[in-house]
Image (cartoon, rainbow, N blue to C red; front, side, top):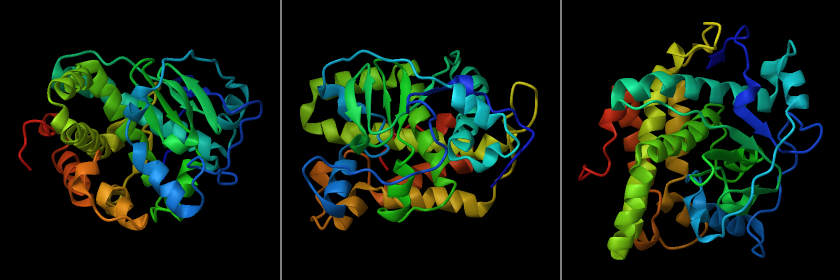
Length: 303
């Protein structure tokens, strides 16, 4: 994967709530999982909502939102070495993902895309879905239409879950924006109503929602090299098959069965909420191979 150093990084698509100075590096891994210690506690905590759109937050009371300060981020991302900074690269990934959906959503679904900001936070954050901490993993909150991520998650993804590839990062973000698209299209609300009518199949419906977000991420990946900044500069110079394999490897590492095994627990399909490794690989690949979000009908598929 090679980003275009001439592409403008639009920091207005991010809300930096990490505090004054922000910080471009990954930093020290933060403890996750409440009272559970060690890797098992981390894995189980991540299992609750790993790369899952934040829908695990629905049980919490709605909360207020807060405003970040992008001053430091803007300075870093306008510097000559901006692409060396983790937060600037992730901001550019967000730019690419939203540039794709601005075109794809009206073309494919006949609906206008409404942009969503990504919130960078550290340890804790107040959201429209309630207060969350980093143990939730990256998530999308449908109550305030925002994507949330503590960038230290990537260290956990690499060191604890065995997915160190750089392209794992835009895959994670593209998955979360897939949830935003589902929210805009009414898919998420429809799924929630189905869960209420058929609670016995609530987990199965959740899996279908997550797999569709994986498929949408694959569709973005197929079209990412065609995305541009507002001035027409391509955001990516190129994406290789190795990059795509990194995304697929990540999808496999965060399958429900893989996480349960890594946590030393028996594989229990009744607890699946995001899909198995094979399913996540299959649906990301479906989106990537077709490049067409219309091919991502997980709810109508028997696969």
